[in-house]
Image 1 (cartoon, rainbow, N blue to C red):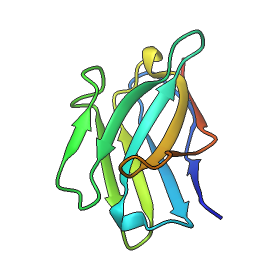
Image 2 (image 1 turned 135 degrees about the vertical axis):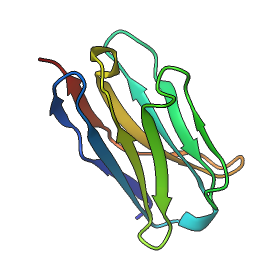
Image 3 (image 1 turned 30 degrees about the vertical axis):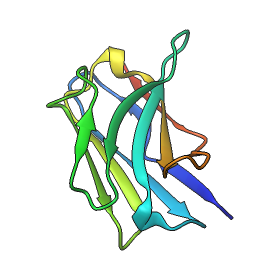
Image 4 (image 1 turned 180 degrees about the vertical axis):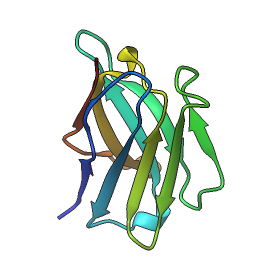
Length: 117
């Protein structure tokens, strides 16, 4: 079965940290660009961070740069999003996406991140 499954969300206080994980299966993991997106209530889904298949390039949204780090372990078919100094504006459902060329993207069901005191 082709899928990606996110985990690691939860409730955290402002200034805290969380690490999200996304495990993929059923596709040639090492050839896919992996990305994290997020969607807050009433807002459009936005790209948070991406990492290329061989980890040579990482990109970040300006709002998370220097606070979030994306990484991947190709031996474990897993991509991570380390989130530090979390703010209330980071509250959203976080989605993992696998994409390669023109093929349809593979989306997970998402994991909720809530930043609140």
